[in-house]
Image (cartoon, rainbow, N blue to C red; front, side):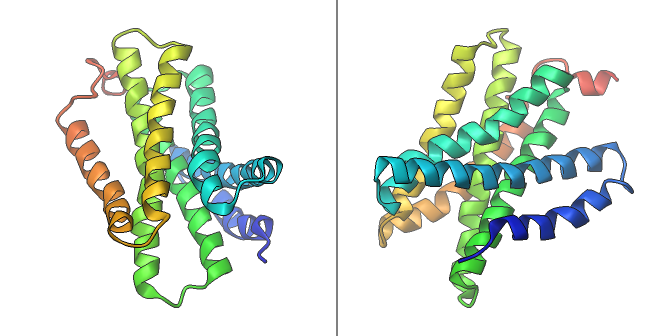
Length: 217
């Protein structure tokens, strides 16, 4: 048994102190990182409660409950930030990347403390697969929001569509890695491949909203 709250405090306090000594860009990323860790902790509470209420086993929970809960929780602070601050596209991407990285880092830390970190190969897979998967879903969410804003169709239905895409990717990954064998290796590789494709699309300007307000300021 581990005490996730204690782990959160141990990681969060030094990062919170760093906020006193860094400038706006770094401050934005660190704040998003802390929010991502808090989101992971809350997702564990909610997912655990729903698993008990539904009576699902661990495998079914990871495929049917966790993707829904975690993606909704990760999207919530981004939507709140979007509504309250009206950030530029670049600032929104920084916030999403920080939130995804914080979520993945905290989840991996708790997982390693509960299962051990002796197997280097497993730890590499954990970092490169699960960690990158959470980052990919956040980038997918933000790039989907980019397109909604670009074509002026930003609405509840549009956001739900983007959220469904992230949930589907998350659930597919969990399903692939739930059983040993060829499917698990496909699952491990999938986040890295998608991260590379998203990077290429981003660099080629496919998700550019036309006029970046961050460049105008």
